[in-house]
Length: 195
Image (cartoon, rainbow, N blue to C red):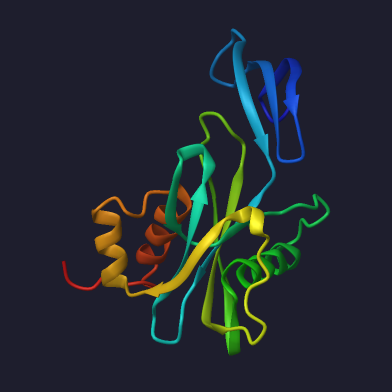
C-alpha cells in the first residue's frame, strides 16, 4: 500500500536498462473497485536551461528515433544511479549532462538554480523531471563529451524572442523544453520580448 493507493497485483511485462512496463490492478483513494493500468516506470531525469550572460538559452538539435525527426530542445538526461537521491547529487547530474550534451559549463560565479520538478506524462509513466537553470554558462575549453548514440546534430544559443517564434511555429515541441520555458517565464527568469 502506498498512501491510500492499494496495489492488488503487479506484473512486469518488459524491462531493460531504461524502463520497465508493469501491468497492475490498483485501488485508489477515490474508487473502491480496483482498476487495471499499464505503467511505464522510468528513471528520474534532469532538465537543464543553460542561459548565457546575454540571456540566451542554449538548445541542442537532436535526432529522436521514436518521432523520426530532429528537434531543438534543452539538454536533459537520466539519473542513472538510484543512490543519487539528494539535491546535491541530482544537481551534479545536471551539470554533467550540461557539459556532455552542449559543451557548456557554469561560468565563473555562475549558479545552478533548482526550479522544482514535474511529471513528463503521468497518464502512462511515473517519470519525474527535475528542472534547473544554469546561468551564466560559457563554452568549455574541452568542448562537449557527448555519446555519439545521442545523435546531437547542433548546439546554439537563442534569444527569448527567437524561442517564442520557434514555439509558436511548432519548431519546439518536446515536453521538457515547453515545460521549462513555461517555468522560467512564470518566475520572470526568461522573457519572450514583445509579441
